[in-house]
Image (cartoon, rainbow over all chains, first blue to last red; front, side, top):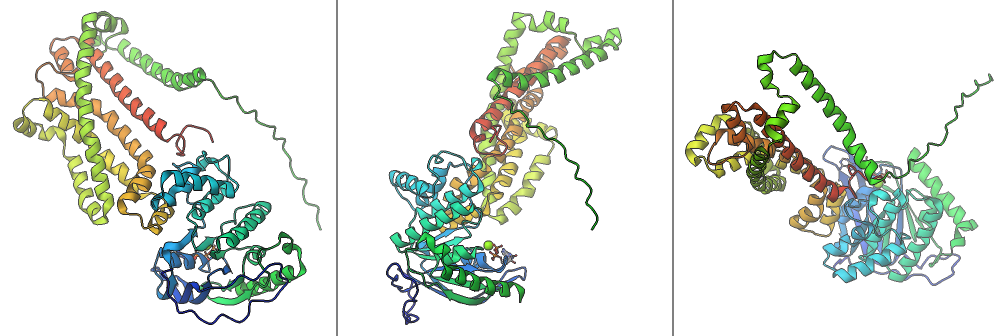
Length: 271
Length: 285
Ligand SMILES: Nc1ncnc2c1ncn2[C@@H]1O[C@H](COP(=O)(O)OP(=O)(O)OP(=O)(O)O)[C@@H](O)[C@H]1O
Ligand SMILES: [Mg+2]
């Protein structure tokens, strides 16, 4: 990694909880926001003094009111536009990013779209094809590799977009509400896929969602943001061990944690 | 609490989905409406002609006269074919200049806003120079050969190309551009892989306009640069001098036919290229 933030003492022992597997060892800092503020040229103050550190093998979800600057935070991390003040530390070479919109190229079939990033990175043709088909299958789009985006449903487009980012196997992965348009069952299935992917590839995740259960199920930490201008109000450590048992969703601890976050989010919206 | 009024329910029956129509039916649907409209124009023509004084009816020849003095005569047909080739040659050569030049100009304007600001007003100015007014100048400078005719066609057909291309290039999805930026793609890669495909349908709209102007401008150029054995334009002038109005009409009809053919060719090509993915494409979901 080219990122060099001095390694800091880890925040205490790995969280306790109903564990079914070993705790994931937290590593070096993989992505950090230090006192980020963002004011758009039109005067909109989107973020105010946001500090957030994500370590290797951590999976952090962000929930917050609509328009509070969550997408803006990811755009700043990726370098799409510069923050007004503060510092971002990240290895952008190893950064995966799925946008809030599927952003597929209408003139390319699904496979061509999934191959795009690999193409821009100079992968060989055969390799592109192999990985693309693999990822298309992963997100449950097999049989649709030769469809144009205009013939896919909104959820299917999003899955194609996800496959495109996954193909590069980045170390740090940012997701901007990737499953917002999906039905509950597909969403849960993809959540499980994401967790197992997270386990297999030991990537670091920053995930934005409006679904609190989804955030809790996926993450090792959930961050609640305030209304615009976005600030970080509260961080919740999620104590459940990986890999996560799909039945976790029905446990009392899970429900209690979701409740707690929900209350906090409601406060964020109402204050 | 007062009772809410009973809702007014209407039965909505399923709408039968028409079976995919055959090629023949599609062709009929494509051809019949314009033919009907065209027939109405013919009737209008006949009515106007019927009301013309007898000694002026030569201005609007009847079908029978057209056949007897033009389309029914092999030597006239041969002349039409030969001259069509010349005219279409001028038109296509002109397009083969205006299309690449127009695309190049569009790309240059897209490269930087400052270039667009510099070039756009000049393009408009160039376009608004009345061609007729500079014809004497062109005649003196370039003579009466093929070159000035081709250049006139190029001038006529060029304008729509950079304008539509630029519009298309600029309306490429920002998100797609962001994808390329995040991978550190060069401007050229972005242009070729994102902007051009996205702009292609708009460009083709411009090409269709250019194509439909090409034959007309070739004929206009011939009217002013009579030399050697010319194309349909020259035939129009000759037949006026010889008082052969049926042949003049024959040349006009042939020119229109050529124009429509060039237009259809470009439309067909655009359809072939984009109908799979573009919203304007004919194919149903
Ligand atoms: N390019 C821009 N110029 C000006 N203001 C912007 C720009 N992009 C975003 N904003 C504003 O910044 C704020 C945060 O936007 P952002 O897209 O980050 O919200 P969000 O938290 O992702 O919301 P959602 O959950 O609805 O996606 C909004 O008020 C938005 O209007
Ligand atoms: Mg957003």
